[in-house]
Image 1: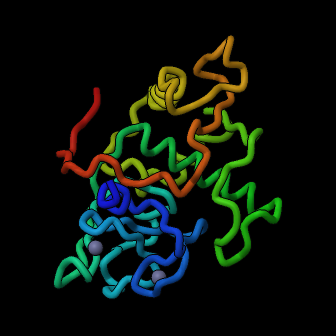
Image 2: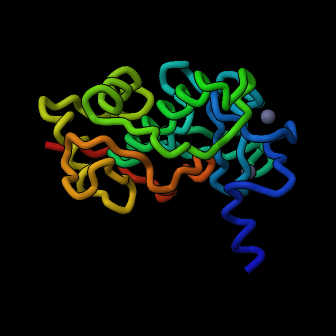
Length: 202
Ligand SMILES: [Zn+2]
Ligand SMILES: [Zn+2]
């Protein structure tokens, strides 16, 4: 039981993570090691060349496999194809953090509340899709921008009732405003740890 808990390593009581032993942050990317499940600040990586371009990463992305230098002689980082849900979750997280920062609930060091307050609604049109469009390279690795991808995002949110709560739940639609059902940002982590081959959608 105890081991099971440790393995998840989403949060620890001491709030000590990374090589540096400091707390997780909400405004820069923290990478979870596939082996030890510890989290590492991107700015603390031992190999500064591990991440090739800044546009290939964004906080709360989960479409990667990372191994830390405590688990391997060298750090390993590779991108994998994200599900739409992974990409959409990252969009919700970043839009929420942006608003938390504006409201002074997260400071400039990226510390503060990791719980999205009630009422932080975002819709496909003005929130999620523009964010995905802007961070496509980071979040939608190898995905083709099909003419209907906006509709795909909408229907993903609409149908994933376990993941997204609609403001107008009784009249839930692809155009609804949504919030993550698990509002703790620190619970977002790479789940598709099995290596998934790149694939294309029609
Ligand atoms: Zn660190
Ligand atoms: Zn590790």
